[in-house]
Image 1 (tube, rainbow, N blue to C red):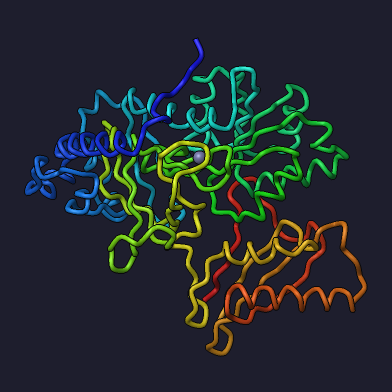
Image 2: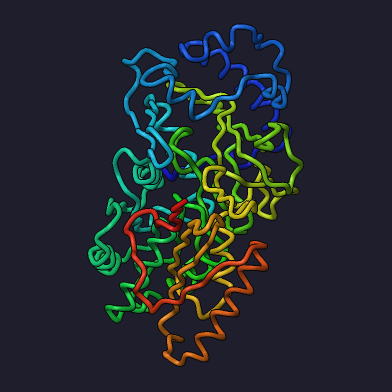
Length: 428
Ligand SMILES: [Zn+2]
């Protein structure tokens, strides 16, 4: 029988009722975790009458998760845990996240819902180019793809030549990949004389794992001749699948029957109105092993107002516009790396790789952006290069409101990565 997911058709009223009930259940379950027992002692679930009442509950931070290691947030007997993931420690110590068997099934469901919405069927060949292992990117999509019935290729990340070989040999139609790595694959295809639009069968690509701009998405779409869909998640929730784009490609539908969304001003912790960016704060609604209440993700996004033309009434968020951790303060101005990418990729002559360096010679912050040019336009005509550099400087100045030094590089000169791209070096 074909897998389907009815929750996608819930009306706003049904979502509200369901969330109220699930929020009560979550609070009751969370009391079983040592880290929450005291903090929830004064909370009566009878006082939870709507999803907005979540605001009377305590927030949970990454720091608290760290302090609660290894089992402070575990709300079920350990015998019920069937898997542990360990979240990437890019911004500090890693934290363990536990799953029961039902947690894993529901995780597959939320990802499968997004794959179905993008038109994936059991006839597709799915090549999963995300890392398998403690990182949740690989396994999250793996089981969803099998739930739908795709032929699933657990390629994992890296080894670009083999990835291309697998795509060609087995006619992969659907990929899951980190966006900067997708560009690397396109680059290697070009070096090998392979035209992905002609020689490969890819039609749908799910990207996630790092913030990226709309311009970068369009480049991947053009390169592969495929539709690219954004996927958002974090290991503290489940992994990929917390929110995914539908065919409209305008905002990511949050799985509101699994997660309760708030967008808060990171300083005042008050809700911001739809359309205004703030910190994504999530409460799990069905998690058994490790319910998390008002978890501060440090990701920045905004709610897209109005009902999506696709018909789904699940709320939409924008692409992740940055992380509170990623924000750079340069000469007193707040800068997100994604703004640099957005400005650069607006310029046709710019290739896909760039590197931001910040240092502080003579007590003043200096931001330098190294930019690779695209192979088609690379020239050694100094006058043309200077004019181009000027144009990039002006575009960056408009976007960031600060002056930036720009260095132009030949295609292939900047370092590349098979995993998440390193875009910023802060030497201050
Ligand atoms: Zn939609």
